[in-house]
Length: 353
Image (cartoon, helix red, strand yellow):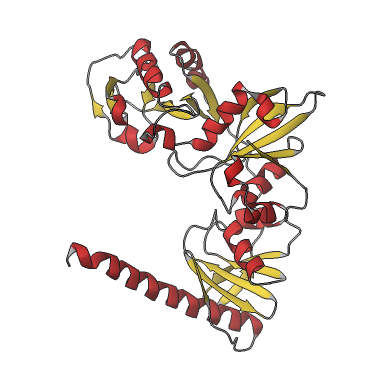
C-alpha cells in the first residue's frame, strides 16, 4: 500500500463501518418496535443515526462518554421530539446526564438484538490523596508552580498547564523535553515512602522521560521549567505547543487573575465532577467564585465549540455548588452551544470573555 492510497483506504473503511453500524441500528430499532423500521440511517461521527416518526435513534460506536451533546444536536436538527441513545459503554454516565435535561432522552444498551434501559450511575465522591502526596504541595509551590488536587491526584500547574505530578513509582530521575523549552532535569523529590514528584506535560510525556539513575534533581530545576512554560503561556505569546494545551484551564487562570471578566469578586479552581481523562484532549474545567454580594457560584470554563459541554455542565449541576456560569471566549458563543445549554432543566448563564 502506498502512502498516497492510505487516505482513500481509510475513507473506504470508515464508510463500510458506517454502513454496518446503520444496519445494526436499524435491526435494533426494528426488534425493539416489533416491526420493520423504514428509513435510511444517517451519518453520525463514531456511530449511526435514524429518525423514526418523531424519535431520533442514535447508536454510538465505542466510548460514549462525550456523545450526549452531539446526539442531542442531531436530534434537534432533524426535528425530533425525543432522543433514544444506544451505546455499549458509559451508559450509566449518559443516563445520569440525561436526567438533567428537559428534552426527553432515553439511554439504552444492547444485548444481542434486545435493548435494555440504562440505569443512571451516581457521581462518585472524589478520593482523598495520601498524606505523603499532600506533603509535596509545599515543594510545588516553592518551585513557583500552582499546587492543585483533583480526584486524589496532587499536581502542579503553570497558568493552567500541568507540569508536574506526584506519583507512586520507583523512579529516581527523568529528563523531559518541553517543545522549544529545551531539556530540563526533572525535579523529582523522592520521599522515604518512594513517593516522587515527576515533571512532564501529561502522562505520555512522562512516559517518554529517560531515566537518570542516581541523580536527585532540585526544586530549582522545577523552577526553571516553570519560568520557561510561563513565558509561552500568555494571551500575547506567539503560537507554541505549550499554549495550545489546556486552554480551558488557561482561561480559568485568567479569571483567577481578573475575576471582573465574569463579574465576580473572586475565582479559585475547583475539582471537576469526574476525573480529567488526559491532558491533551480539550475538556471543560471548573472554578468556584464569590460574587460581589457574597454568593457562591460555580464557573465552568470551556474553549472552542464543544457540543458535549451540555453533558459536562449537567454533571456540574448534579455535583452542586450553586448557580452555574459558563465562561466562553466571545468567538465561541455560537447558536448551537446556546441551544444545547438551553436544554438543561436548571438554566445557566453564559458569560463571554
